[in-house]
Image (cartoon, rainbow, N blue to C red; front, side, top):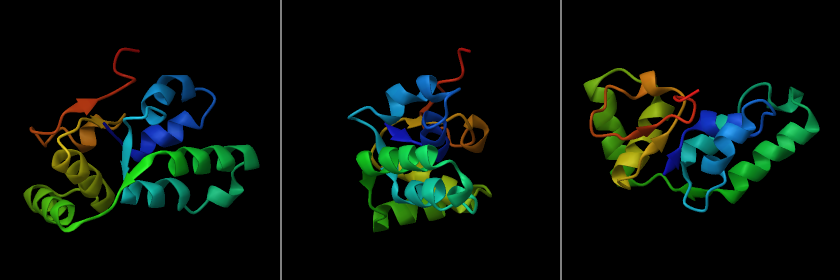
Length: 126
């Protein structure tokens, strides 16, 4: 499975961590290269409590990261040509599609227009 950035972020939170932890910390979990940038590179990261920063760093650094290669780039371009979507979302979706894996995300609306993409929402049954 490929984990969307929001799943890693929720894993580091007390309230939603238990819901997302089985996905983010699974040995089968992968992240797109852009996920590391989204999770660790947001503007107020340094304003977070030190323990939350450490938790996010730990999650990102222990999850297998898929490098951005030409196949993922070509697929992300095609996705963005079909429908306007954020660059990060296109790269994450393209990564899941290239590896024929489901995408774990809370943001189903960002991806539901991609019929061949299998989505898992850990929050759907709550």
